[in-house]
Length: 474
Image 1 (cartoon, one colour):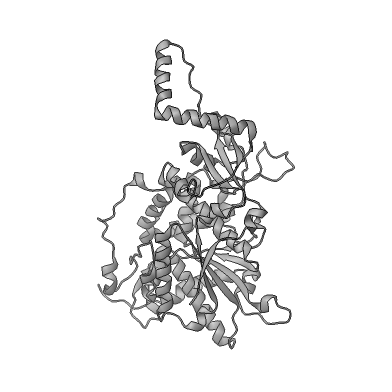
Image 2 (cartoon, helix red, strand yellow; image 1 turned 120 degrees about the vertical axis):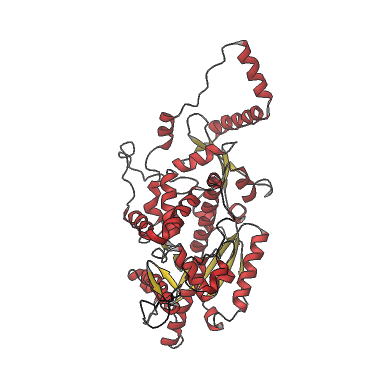
């Protein structure tokens, strides 16, 4: 391959090519860093949280608190590195003063994952990547996903009606955590797509609950790349959650579901995932990545060829992929020549606004109801729509032969499970209370054999119940 000069500095040879432009290492790192920094200074609110402030009576001496959700992906490490470089600049330019501190939060699913995260974090801290002075501005918190249930103040059992798609709930007391936990919940999900949805709900809630409980944290900085947000948008549309797009990308308003305590910022939304992979390779952060394969698709130099993944390996069947993974695969395939398509998807999503109330809710004086599982707004009744397109009532038994076959079915495992569900449904419909669910969560719940789920009640008491967390230090 013929060496080419960097198009920006026109001095060094290019090592990366993205968006049809060649970059040297230094210019590429600056290119990515400036994209994140620009969005961190997008308006006065965010500027005041990330720059060094001077004056009297400043809150917390002018130092703001920022939460960084951290999943040990290339996106997380890239966001961390840009924050570190900004803090180092502030420390030098303002003679020891900085504008913000960062609380890094990682959610782990099991003990094996916790050990992997702790090991990677220890490797990073023990390396010479960053000065000890920088780490004074960071706190690292590990949260067990099981606290989603164990630390919840009140739980309820949500049951979906198998014929009319309405949902009701009963208060539930979890006496033994082994009876119902994250592992049990995910095992009951019928497919990887539903499991992925549930896991995202759990992780998002725990991170936002952490931010809510740490008073003074007014910014949650999500390290989601443009590629991830684009497949998120496509995924929402395909899963019937399109009305949630505007709220999920909202960086302007405080998060009303969590006491308007903080805003959600997406500073990497103008950066492709492959660019963040290249960023990690150049900085050497790729060796700390966990549960993710860093790709070197944009690298031009020979010294990263050994990192290239053989496309003949780990080939996954489309039928085994989640909706988000299918969207990601599509974007990965077109990113080289048509990266503008990914940007167009994100720009379109950014322009969307929440739907207006439909005619069936327009006369209501009350606020739009929220889904009890995902907490998103419900703008029209999904149960009514599903009843109009689906027929769930069986034909009555007419002959002795059909009666005999029905008895055989009742004695089968499926029949016994159905009988248990019907008994639970009748009890909940007699003693329970109404539970609003959105279309996407109805579809997920309908796929679970028992058509029921244990879930925390989302209220102020639940948010203020202290999370059980690990804080790692030196």
